[in-house]
Each structure stands twice: as structure tokens, then as C-alpha cells.
Image (cartoon, rainbow, N blue to C red; front, side):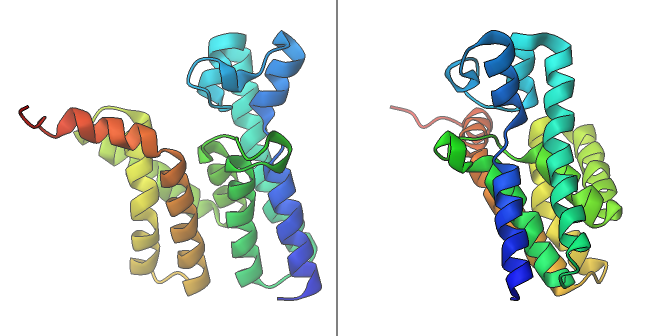
Length: 196
């Protein structure tokens, strides 16, 4: 990877670490959002404290930094495989932000923004798969997580480049890891409890 590619990765990671919800709540309510509600810095938790305007601002802010990371990488003129790594880096930055001692969000809005800028078809596929899954199971978040898991496979079937598929797979792994507690609770609800 070239020096410009490394710089773009670093910028993407640091950009991802600017967690919109954390700073909004700090400014508006003078509290640490991570000590309230679900403990996350995402739009849903921010909405519990700042209402709908906070929810929308956080959602847009987190998505925008995903867009910005990809746009900046392309402005730098780095190769597409390196841009695909930038996609993963901005999501990782949001989940494990350096300024917040690696306690960030769960990456969904940032991923959607990055997918949209990288190839808008990826964002459309993700939302489409989520919508189809919601027909069979209620719950936007769980359907969305399964959609993240399926997206690399769909990209492979559609013949997308290997570096794109690898970036999607990497993004899916870290997003699913960030949601591990929610996934564990979902399985606990579905699977029968063992008798004592």
C-alpha cells in the first residue's frame, strides 16, 4: 500500500472516531451518553435523551462521516482495493474510537454511509435484504444484522470484485461483534431454555 493509502486509512479511522451522538449529548445535556440507556452512542440511545432531533442529527452525522471517508479516499486517488480498506477503517473507528477510549457505537449508520459512497448499489442491496427479512421476522435491527451477514455472499453471487467482497465481510464481522450482546439475547429468546 502506498503512503497516500496509509494516510487515508488513518484519516478514515480518526473520522470514524468522531461519534456524533456522544458529542451532541455532551453539548446539549452535559452527560456521557454511554452511561445512560443502552450505553451506546448511536441514534436510538441519543433519541432517548435528546428526542427526535437528536436521533436524526446522530443518524445523519454518523452516516456522513462514512460518506466523507470514501469521498476523501477517492480524492486522494488511491486504488480501489485501498478504498475498500478505508470503508472498513471508518466503521472500525466508529466502533472503537481512540478519543473515547475505544468505547464507541455499533457502526450501522456509518457503514450505510460508507456503502452509499463506495457503491450506492451496496446500500440499496443492504436495505432491500433488510426489508425482505422483516417480512419473516419483526425487528429492524436484527433483520439488518442478518442483511450485513448476507451482503458479502450476495456481492459474490453478483460478481463484484474480491476486494469489495472482503471489505464487506470485514465490516460485517466487526458490526456483528459490536452487536454481540443483542445477538446473544435474541438467541436466548428463540432457543429453548435447558431444564435445571
